[in-house]
Length: 287
Ligand code: MN
Image 1 (cartoon, rainbow, N blue to C red):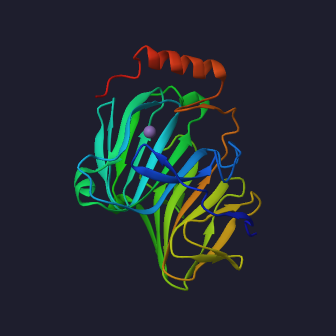
Image 2 (image 1 turned 90 degrees about the vertical axis):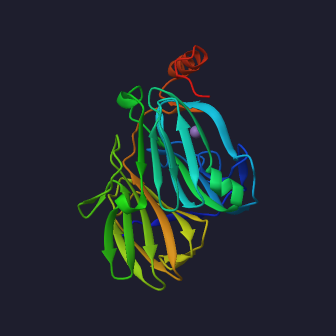
C-alpha cells in the first residue's frame, strides 16, 4: 500500500544561525510546527545554496552547549568544520556527514572550513537534531565523522541510494543510532524512478536538495519538503531532472518533549538541571 503524501512544504523564509548558516527551518519553528510530528527528528534546518564571498574570518556559530540529542550535519556544497569539548574535531565536505551525540552535554562550535572561507563559494547543507530516547539522554557524548565513500550503497537502474543511517534491503548505513531510523541520500537520474519501502508507522519526509521530482503526480521542486502520512509502506519517486533527495524516516519516540534553546529533554526539571550544569561548567571547556 502506498504511503500517501500529506503535504508539500515550500522553504520557510531563511534566517541566519550565527553568521555562517543561512537556513530555512522546516520544523519545529516553521513549516511543520508540531514537535512530535517528525519524531525522532526534532529539527530540520536547511541551508539552501547560497554564495558567500571570500572572508578572512571563518563564518559560523561560536561556542555553545547541547544536551539530550544528536546534531547531524550533512554537507552538500562547501565545507564545515567542528570542534567540541569532548576533544573531537573534524572537517566535512560534499556528501560527508558529521553525527555528533551531545547526550549528557558538550560545548561545540561549527563554522566554515578555513580554505572555503578564504576562497568563498556556494554553501549548502542540512542540520538535523535527532532526539534521544529518555534512557540515553545522559549517555556519554560521541562523535562520528562519516565520509561519503563509507555510506551504504544500493545501486539501482537509474540511480543510487546512499544509506547514512539505518538500512535499506539489509544494506546498513554506517551511523550508529539510539532508536530505529533511516537517513538516506537518494540520487536519481533524469526521468528515472524508485519505489522505496519504509515502515508504515515511521514518520517520513523528504527534502529535495537538487532538481525536482514527482510523487503521486505532484511536482516537488528543489528546496521543498514532502511530508507523508503514516499509513502505507511504499513511496514512488520519479525524477523530472537529475535529482538528489534527503530521505528521513524514523520510529516515533512517543515521549514528552521539552525544548529550551540548545537543550532537548523530557521535563522542565531536566531543563533546569541542564541550565544549572551548564552554568556550573559541567559541559567541559572549549576555547
Ligand atoms: Mn550546535
